[in-house]
Length: 129
Image (cartoon, rainbow, N blue to C red; front, side, top):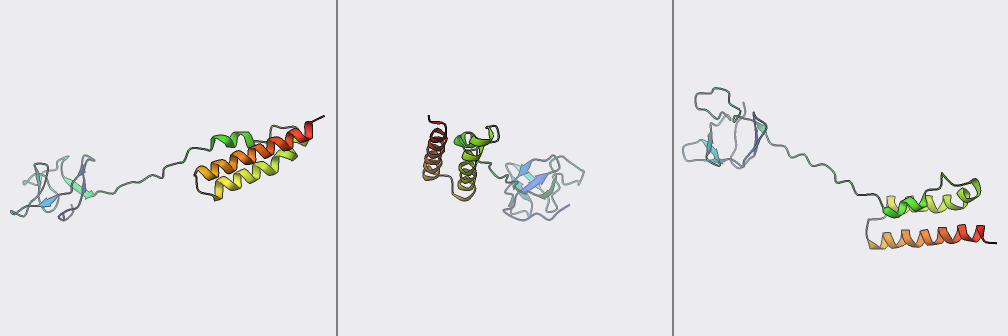
């Protein structure tokens, strides 16, 4: 078992988050009407219980994955014929650099949109008659 400490949060044998536990005047710990011995046992008779506290609670924080920039789909160039691919490729690489290096905000979105306008103009300049 473990040694409980006032104000800490624990995981029960059943996997639940319990706490923060508080030290009572009788030297038992309590949380929401449940009382625990100093070693984490729920029952004073020390019989195993799903309510026993078995470890300190560890928050698992997963990184929040940012959604992809919608505009990036228009910078794809692998599907293009060779000549248009060569025209579009530098714009696609620059768009990838912008997304990788700049913080996501309105100005980055504007930069990507302006770059897309430039790429479209370059492609139209090539195919114009």
